[in-house]
Length: 370
Image (cartoon, rainbow, N blue to C red; front, side, top):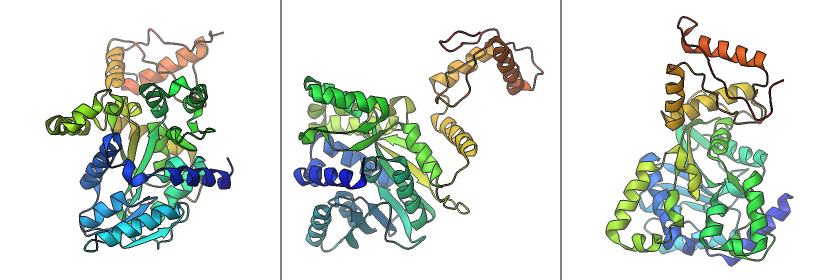
């Protein structure tokens, strides 16, 4: 989509939606409370200099200012910036340090000038991967060593769950929107219904992780914000009960990093750290090195989940565990010769060929081996 067209659609959407009000009640309030809980745990202690890039009307920036942070807000929507300035004047004792119209792909700040960068909206409004990487590299540039990035994304499956929970699927136009969302994450709204959102990109958790790493950050984790509870029919009842709300927040924190539940959340936040010695990659990366790094980080983040436990059990009993490749460009086993070769590689990986483990079974892809 042309950049000017995407920008105009975004501006049209936010002209009809009051973003600050959205985060004041119901599921929107859950998003706000959970986001601020994550920030409170992972941001450096105040006073620290924080950039809120794509900070909208300043809901999070105002809260951070009250905690003693020096917060600089930017947003591409002039209406949001004016709302943030007005709200900042209303809390004169804890004002936002600055508010300006700006583009996440060109942050108007000096190199290594901030202790943390919030990108709680730009990544899903930037529908092209190259633009998202440009924004993330800008965050890396303006951040001091040891600073953290907080990059929000919308789950690839958000419209699937929302569409059925609110019965948007009764509209054939939304069904077509949903089909494309699930196919490639490129969400488009050709209707005038603001509930169907605007042009955006919906992430898989591993896509978010890979983008953070490719921008030069050390990936730390992806956490779910709303978890699976945002589509519960009785969410409002639990949220309005102080005891149930407390329990809900406790258990959402408990499972926030569970990889098997990340797809069920509406929003997720990827956390990355700028480590001394890392440099911006300027758009160039070693694909194999990046893939190896992503694989190691993903394994560390996942821990001994159900899949790895099952794999270990199969290996201990003499089987070769075979998981289908995550990506189309990864090698597939398609012949008996490759099967034997793969089995040999497994034995070498397992224990340098010194044990009696044998690969007695290997799952092949659906197409038959020749």
